[in-house]
Image (cartoon, rainbow, N blue to C red):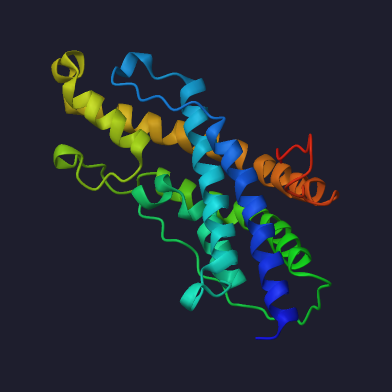
Length: 235
């Protein structure tokens, strides 16, 4: 590897680190709270969970772009879209929706710097997952129709979505739910699944647009240089 190639790679990785730090800030800003009482599960808490899931999807996709290939090489764009897709959300896997598979389209683009490549690919990722969102929503909505009878898994087995599992566990522990019977427990899980789906669809595309814009704004100014007095290191 030549010195120029090494510098390009360093600039690229540093840019991805800045973008990932930006995503992490969004994740950290969302309150984390688990509610064990079914009566206390509110739309605001469900929305927080949906936003957290969306930003973690974007985080997974960008991490793959940075070093998701073999031996920490850059990951494929198709693989990044798969990881950031709505169909890769925990709720989708709970409902049996498989992550999408995309063909890799190779476009020969020359970038002035590694940072320019990272910015382009990250913003293009947000465009791609937004374009995929309607199809993902359709497939998840079909699963939410519950064409097959909804069965109660034993002790929460098979429920990967933490919000749905929390509802299930809470229902098992709730005296009111035990008195009401299994049908009401399943109804609670169904309601939470629909609520989670509606909220994650509501926040997904706006979050992608927000991140796309913030990435452009982040790199409109040169990164801070260490060692300077009164230099802010905030993104």
